[in-house]
Length: 255
Image 1 (cartoon, rainbow, N blue to C red):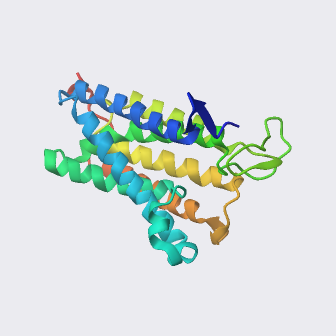
Image 2: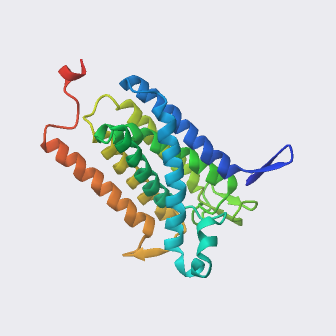
């Protein structure tokens, strides 16, 4: 594990580096897609910046809400402290910021959602590499399988061998990102984002069975409950589209 690297005397957090890399990679994908759609490529930087700011704000607010009893004595410290970023809060905050940007640019439509689907999956996959390298506690339950590993030097250390769940998530969401990118011109507007909801929700639902988060309701963790909502919303969306003309773009229209 390498939670921190030294660059000419300047300590750099590896999670932060991978976090930034995820945004850069997502921006590159958005830029490529905007060019294909005949839109200004510079919009990619605006979208990424909006998502970054909204994501940071949302993840911190979500952390404070989830851990209110621990931070209520120092709310400012909880909001602006150096730890505590929750992915779902970041996703919500980033989505709100991007929607505001889209409204100002006149691009508030289903095509915007499809534009963001592959980058969202890719950014998540890269971010989990940061979790793995830094050993930030996102690893799974104790396990003695062939690729089990310990995180003795992680940010949240453990000498017990466990499931390396960040690796599982990187592989799964990397495949989701690739699949969504391959389907970008084959589906009607909105279907690509619906597939993202199904893929991301299913992946997190399944990996949570191997992680150490406490149960919240009916034997499921909070991320699992949220993931079920995501996946079900995606399935219902696709079902509605199938009843209203289908999910795929017509062959003649594609030609």
